[in-house]
View 1 (cartoon, rainbow, N blue to C red):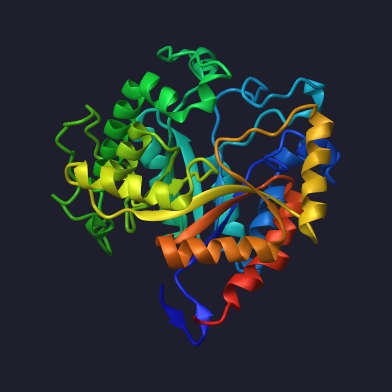
View 2 (cartoon, helix red, strand yellow):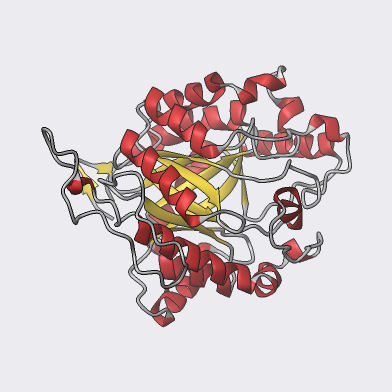
Length: 376
């Protein structure tokens, strides 16, 4: 990986914004006490500004059609202490992009129960507000409840035992991943139907012949789009270690977030993904990122104690779809440097267990260590 003036270059650190944190106990452990604050602009724009000022390269926003449940979280405790609901990520992204200097916002959007024309228009609108700062993350819905609340096509109902085996999920949801590929291809194609250069000047608003429908192939949406596209958003996917999500990423994504665990470490995931990428027709080289949850402390012992306390609050061990780093910012920086130097990872998305605690430590303690690391 290149170094510039003795400083780390081309390794990007992202902060995954989700409510007040990713641990089920984040709400009772958060300094926030008024739930309505999560549904206003200040919480999101404040974190966007803090991330930008602290050297975070990008933030990510989640999507979800149904209210969060404990179905897969292993949370037997009081459901009134768990965050319910979220703002639409496109609206939230518009606030963050227009009110902060953050370099990039990765916007998740459910493609299982959404129309590709609407998604293409929404993301193109964001790109018009902030050219070059918008990335689209297509989200495949594995929650049968999502279909129920929107009246969409029913999807397989998964149990808690299913989410422990990503390959089982991928096999059961194979058709959904194939549909997602079709949707994303249609969205990217729609972005080409109203090129920015088709806009005219003076008394000519647009140049005849440059705005045109696409030829429907993977999806019947023809367009043309109703928003001019100057810089088309990149596409990033979250891929758990299984064939179908890796196939989707290789087929349509510019960037993939891999989910390392003790059983599936980064070198194993990189090798597996590159192999699938080689076997995927028309696949371009995909940039690899890691995606991990973090619980940080001043010492390894204090971080482990924090995680134990969070688990005690919920009455269950925190189980996620990726690995959980528990330790110091310095220890995390060492892990990330190893992934970068040895495995070719281009960046990382960090999921703070409690945003007010772990998010602040990421910005205050981790980012300076990454930026100030001397060349090797």
